[in-house]
Image (tube, rainbow, N blue to C red):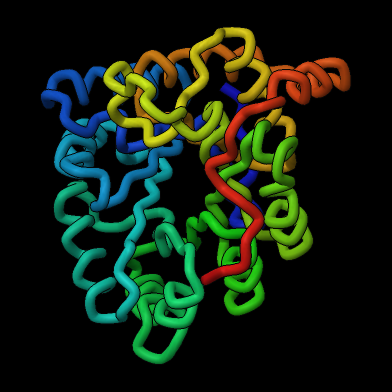
Length: 286
């Protein structure tokens, strides 16, 4: 499994990350098996959040035997200093670790998120204090709005940004390249979400096969390979696949034999994107 540098941190991460949703609602032996399989195949980047149901309770014990070699990222959706500090400590306990390698403001989407988290008494103050106390090593954020992501990078020297970087969104909306460009300019590490998403769930679609996906995932093997290779061909460090084990394993297979996407393959993706419904739009933060 290829590894790439994370911004200017000096850390090197596997180009595929293990999303904690993979172990949400599974039995502990299955969680341990999934983590061991990932480690055996070269994964060292693990990402989780308290908003992922019981993922922390499952991932903590499963990752504990492998913690020394893992780069562990966690997040908070709390926007006040007091609440974020409390959630961080609760996550550390559930994850059976004394520190996170990366701690992120999670799902920064609206203007309110931005102002509360970065303002006086905001969550960012708790993250900075946690870094000073040795509870976290690096600070980052995840976002689902281009304007918010750009403004966050203007306001603070974050180590990383976790953002949807998806083939269909690039082609149909132009959503994502602005964040990558700014992050490259500022030396902020780039981590990708939604690489293997196809489109917004069509009205009336049967979602029972993929209960952990709030969007329609790609099931066609050719399209899945092209989509992931498209994202990994951008100037990014890693991509986190959907939280379904069959799709995660497909991502591992693609990553293990990764080659950059060609111009002809990009054109094929443009054709495949026609008529698909975006799940994000280029809209101003509300």
